[in-house]
Length: 194
Image (cartoon, rainbow, N blue to C red):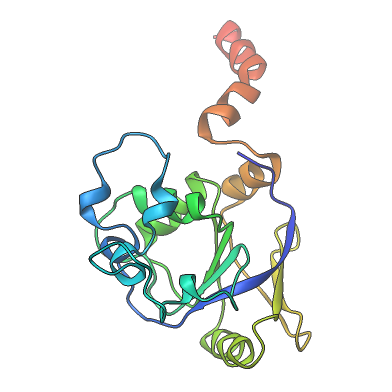
């Protein structure tokens, strides 16, 4: 995984509540066992017509919006526990998802795949949606070390919570196996001391 310290980026607004994992990546795309190509099918049923052509009114097809931060409505990632949803978000190029609430399993899957879920207040979220709809060039800055998200259009900032272990993994670019391998000498010393 890539190290994550800070990120400043434009945002893609998805002001829809209760987006479940089947909407993020429809079940018909779950046959693959590696992460390749999942970003192409992110929000496939909302993003493409039945003939495969892009739906002009869907935000990912709107050239005004771009960046590596997805700003989503409340209760993002509900539904089934499919890890493929995090694969699709990462595969598309999103490094952060900002919402006022995430489903627990999605939140853990995102963190395990190098995508940072940032929980903000409903007021902060509404303000970001309002500003980006007026000016698509609005940016957010995510500072993982300080655990802050800043709306650069107005300077307002909030702190967010993250598990200390997952924070360490993201800051150092480690997945769970990399983390264990980084502790190999300590584990071996512990085993010898038994």
